[in-house]
Length: 122
Image 1 (cartoon, rainbow, N blue to C red):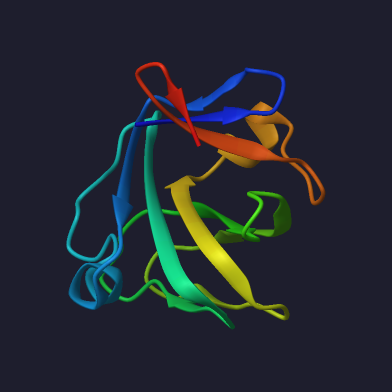
Image 2: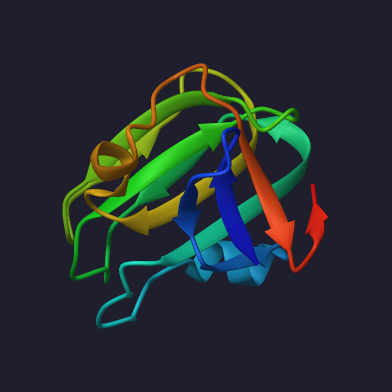
């Protein structure tokens, strides 16, 4: 799966979606590193306040909080091991990526992204 900006610019070419609670609890814990194009997408059936921690994650990450229309509601960069994030708004999706992607791609609150699988855009 890919993550694209609304103008078609590529954010991630190796995105994985996690919908089950066990996968969401584990997230990026115990991974030694992630690639520059890797992203982990969390989908919540019901909008919710999101809490993220960086315990057992030895690298920094960027976080996107998205609404149901895939509009960015918030961004954050979390430090390894000690980073913590709690959203101020309820979101439908969270995207975790390598630190620096938000700046490199020029992502900001209000931007819309899309998820693409081959020729299918969601």
